Length: 322
Image 1 (spheres, helix red, strand yellow):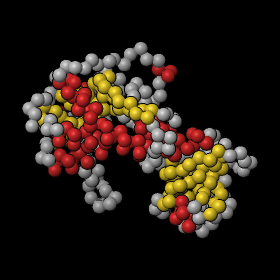
Image 2 (tube, rainbow, N blue to C red):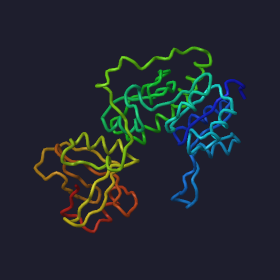
Image 3 (cartoon, rainbow, N blue to C red):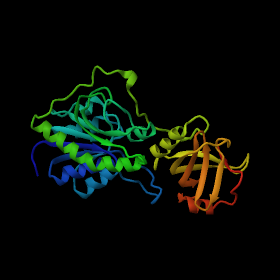
Image 4 (cartoon, one colour):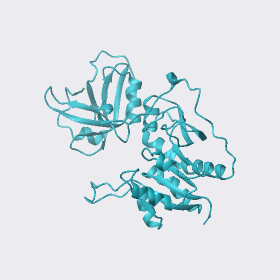
């Protein structure tokens, strides 16, 4: 185990777990972990759900804290007792100055975009929703303004044409540990020159705000075929694009769409009309053609491929979405 530096790792989910594992396996000195409080209820077990970070801490006997309030005096006294040289943050909530300013070498964060573009809570979703062809990872020193700190390192990758947010997240996760460790080593060896995020034309910046359920509804009549297709990819598998599937003017169900493809074709059908041609083809008419559903979920049922979904429909004519 390396004695220096003394590291406090701060994270919450499976994305952050990848970096924690890399640090631990390479025998960096992780003196403590901060993660979110337990989820009070798990759908699977009906019991409290631990974060992946807490589970890893328990498995490897690493001290951890789960503060509700990051300014709580008891929490702050405990974290100070760890006497960290540096703090590494991956996928966590806003840190107050009382926390990020503690280590003498600073606190750095890993963000899943090429800053200054796509500052915010959901960068992986928004780069696909906006039809970008590249994204990446950025490490930066934490300062008072969220995602505005001095940039340390960046790694750029191409976004595949049919890639979903879930698939892109997996690819970014695979390279996240290496950029965290490279950043750490460069800081330790004084081989990095932090680059301030200044002289930025804010009119050219794209943001990545938190996505709410209402934001996931597909606007069939106003969006282009490309925008609808990108929205479905960018919200898959979570929080998931959705619409209302009507069986008649009064009966409807929420319909989630996980995977689809776009078909450019001139037509005169009303926007939102559904056409079922066989047991494996459901097309929805849009401005420049059709969105063909590959995987979806009707309210009250499980997620299904299109064949099983169509097979479960009692009505297959005069369907439409809105």
